[in-house]
Image (cartoon, rainbow, N blue to C red):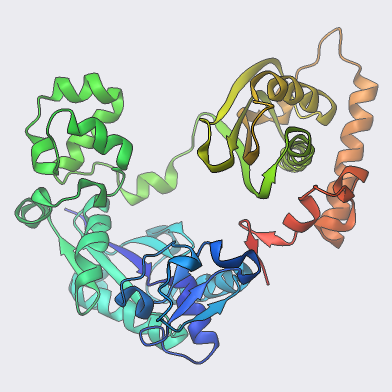
Length: 417
């Protein structure tokens, strides 16, 4: 039996903004949002004090009742990354990096099994030690789920810790079956979203207990190989360890990128942004020394007026040539995109990404042209790395509806500074 912590930084972005202002996140009403986008701006985070008043996380500013006074803080992604790094250094005071798995900017898993003997502390005491040091070092409150496997630690965090006075929850398989087995809604459980929940409803399975009593054949027929994870989790079982996650190397890789446009775009204007995205992602491919043999794209439309469109294309070659890939993407975009509806979201990606040594060369390849293009791409990458992403721009980047110059100043799609 193992022992894991799943540590989450409470309302992280909002808490950082409170701490930076010398305010208590537990007592300050603060929303992290870009006010320049008006009352429709999405709150990336709200402080625990606002949550206590019934305001929902990830709401829009207009959803905050008029009778509640609050501070609006512009998102500062670089600042949040700095705090995340500071907190990671706190973890390193107690644990080896080999026993820490960073799950997101504000959440991580830690294998503490061997450290209980080292520190002569039980799992609860170690969790309290970590929470106290994070608060003392940064002013940020952490919550902690503890479990005898990774799944139980995550569920303990999501369901038990967030309602506990000391912000700590604990689950082993026995306690899991006494409490979480019958918990509803089932979408509170890690990795069970609305789609999976609706498919389970067909069999009157509204809790993990109900899932655990379903015929496994039904689950495999419904979910295929993914049924194995659902069956295990319904019984509080997780076979994967943190060590196995750290050592995992995928057979096939992919690179993808998406953006929500600042406003609804006509087809031609959206295609301009699409071209910018292709160029940026091809440079990323070249910088990593990779080539691809498969591309895919998705286009989302204004106010969900129609379902997203898109598709994929096998190229029949491995390449990282912007000249070739832009032409492939153009064909796919023109073939799959609805020209009669306003566009709001664009996503593109490269599949089956492998090392550049696998680049396709045949009798029809113009090797001299390919070499010139590759050298140009490498030069652009060096200049951008040294002088900034906007140090080299194309004519299309300064057109009215282009977004790349502005997006180069963002981190994770949000204001960086």
